Image (tube, rainbow, N blue to C red; front, side, top):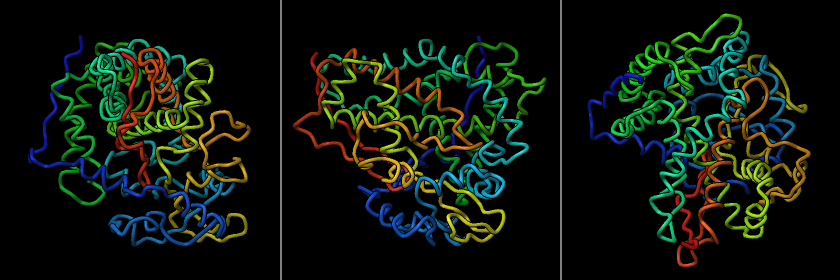
Length: 416
C-alpha cells in the first residue's frame, strides 16, 4: 500500500483560483462566424486570436508580435514543421512558468528523447487496462448519485467531475485531499501572470509529486504514476524534474480537455436524437461519434508556436520572432476539407482526420486515454439511462467560449 504524502493548501485559504478558469474560457457563444471570416482573408492574418473575442488584456502575450494561421493546410504546415515553428519560445513564459520543464515546452532533440519514454507509458494496450480498473468505478460512483432520479445535469453531476476523479484514482489520492489538489492545479496557472499563488501552488504540487514518486518506485502498481516512474527506453528513465512537470500539467491537459470533449460529445448527440439513437443501437459507431465531436467543437480552439526563422505559409511571409496563433478550430471546420463543417454529423466522410489532438511531434500523448474515458462514459450512459433526452422544461445546452469550449449545463431526463 502506497504511503501518500500530504498536500499543503495555499497560505491564503480564501483565495479562489477557479475564477481564472472562467476568464480563460471566455463567454463567446459562437466564435465560428468570425473564424470563417478570418480564414476567408487568407492563411495568415495579422493580430491575436484572443483579441477577436475579448477586451480582457493578455498580460503575457499581448505586447508580442502575433499572427493567426488559419485553414487546414496552413495549420498543418505549422504543426508539422517543428524546426521552423517551435514550442519552447512559444510556451516557456506561460506553461513553462506554471508547470516547469514539461515536454510541451521542449523541442527536438530533447523533446524526441523524452517523448519516446512517455509514449511507452501511454501505449494503447497499457491505457486499455485502466478502463475497467480505474475509469469504470469512477463513472459508476458518479452515476449512482442521480440514476434513480430520472433527471440530471450531466455536466454539473457527471462530466465536470469524472476525468478529474480518474486522475485522483491514478494518483491514489485520498478523497479528503481532492479539493486542495484541484485548487493547486488551477492556481499554478497564475504563475504566467505574476500572481504569487502561482509559484506557491507549483512548488507545493512539486513537493507532493516528488514524495509520491519515491513511494511509487518503492512499491509500483499498475497505475499511470507507477508506469511513468518506472518506464524505461534504452535504459533511460524520465528525470524527476521532467516527470514532476508533466504531472503538474496532467490535471489541466488531461482532466480539463476530457471534461470538455465528453460534454460536447453528449451535447452533439442529444441535440441530434437520430444520431444518439443510432449510436445506442450500434456501439461500433462510438469511435466516429467521438471523432466528430472533437472535430466539431474541439476542447482547444487555438494554440501557439514561435517562428524561429523568416518563413512563409502559402506565399504569405512570416518574420522570425513572430508568435503564431495556430487556430485549430479553423482547420477542423475548413469547408475545403469537411462538407457542411458547422454541422454535427457522425456519418460524415472521415477521409480527412481532425486535428483536435494537434499533429506532428507534439500530437497529444494522452489521446488514447481520452478516448478510453469518453468511450466508457458514453457506454455507461447509454446502458444505464434508458430513453435519454434533453429536458424540455430546461434551457437547451449552449456551448460557450472563444478558447476553451463547453456548455455550462446539460439538463436531461431518462426513464428510471
